[in-house]
Amino acid sequence: AKSLGRNNYQIFEGSAEQSQQQNLALKSGLRHAEHKGELRVFYQPQVDAVTEDIVGMEALVRWEHPELGFIGPGFFIPLAEETGLIVSIGEWVLRTACRHAQEWERRFGLRLRLGVNLSAVQLMQPNLLEIVASALDESGLEASLLEMEVTESISIKAAPNLVENLQGLHRLGCRIAIDDFGTGAASLDYLRKLPADRIKIDQSFVRNIGVDPDDEAIVRATIEMAHRLKRGVVAEGVELEQHMEFLRANQCDELQGFLFCRPLPQPAFEKLLLERQHL
Ligand code: C2E
Ligand code: CA
Ligand code: CA
Ligand code: CA
Image (cartoon, protein in one colour):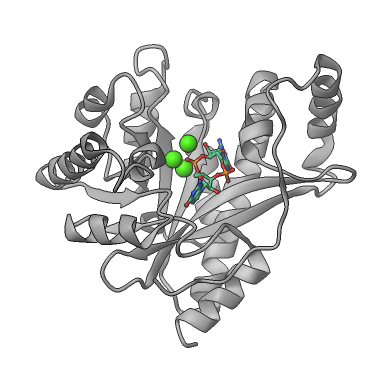
């Protein structure tokens, strides 16, 4: 694969044993991160499995802490969910990413799909559709270019507005992707009940390509099942040529992973687009 540039950003990952006190300090810091302008949206390209052209990108939030540097979402999203801050952070990510995507379309003429993660808390919000509609309206981004990523770990039964909200997003013209497919307790139930356009094969399966024949069989069967259901498939966590070759040989539609590019801040992602699309 052609390398899509490199990333010099150090991502701070907190350990599970962060003391209560540190967590408290971080929670209060997080409360102000948005209005202090400490949040950033990074973008990771998704490439066509055959041509390796960039066809979309996933928006991934980071927190640039004044003392600790870049903090990864794996660490602060759970804190944001606990405190309810995820609602306003998620809205900020959505509005920012829609604006960037629309800008790339306007300036470069690129119609790239934008993936945005939605947390369970957001999916249960009664005003989710109004927020998404206003983010589209305000940015001018076409609804069909926006793909909401919904993780499988959310229980359909336990989330009151989930199905209605996803159907509403579809009516707005947005696409829905099931994230981390295969890791939840109810993958098939999800496929059956939710209006999903695509599934994202979880990186834990992709990582085992070339290592575990059972996981390879699951990846193959997942791609075939998705295609029979007329859904698209993206594989996440593609790190090796061997992963790419296997996924390509088994007709996976799109690929995302460090083999192509790490998540990049907006200016670096723009530079990548300019280089790669020969603009
Ligand atoms: P995710 O949605 O499954 O996102 C993919 C994660 O895998 C990202 O981690 C990405 O940097 C990482 N990744 C991409 N390619 C590779 C690869 O080849 N190898 C490996 N080992 N990892 C790869 P990141 O950015 O740290 O995000 C972690 C999680 O935080 C995301 O997992 C998502 O669940 C959550 N997240 C990120 N941004 C947001 C957001 O704006 N809102 C919400 N609700 N959650 C977010
Ligand atoms: Ca995701
Ligand atoms: Ca995922
Ligand atoms: Ca994940």
